[in-house]
Length: 124
Image 1 (cartoon, one colour):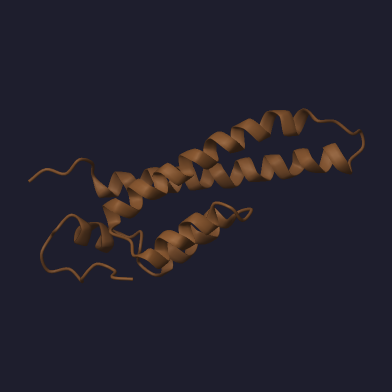
Image 2 (image 1 turned 45 degrees about the horizontal axis):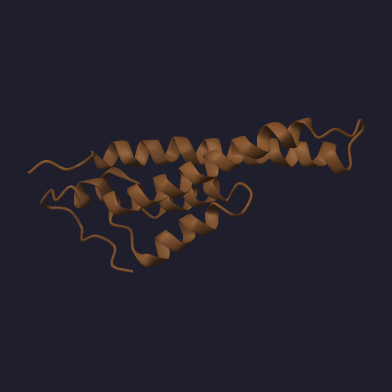
């Protein structure tokens, strides 16, 4: 039986988008610094990184949905991924946590792909 998409590719795309989300957050924070506190005061950074971060934020949410379905995340993992999209650099923190707990690894991908001899998928 073929799957709609490869779970390893979903995880790889999620990692890439999560990293881009963190980088765009940094750009937006720097832009806000120069808008409100910096010298010279300018809105250029916010005008550039605001829409960029908005687009990458939406992409992160979509990627989290597809990756969560592919890797069969439980409710708690879904909530942490969505919370990670709100907190500055939270997407990277979520990825570190997900890697350490095995929610993004090849074993999780094998379980989601239905390969025998692997541990059961997450239930919470």
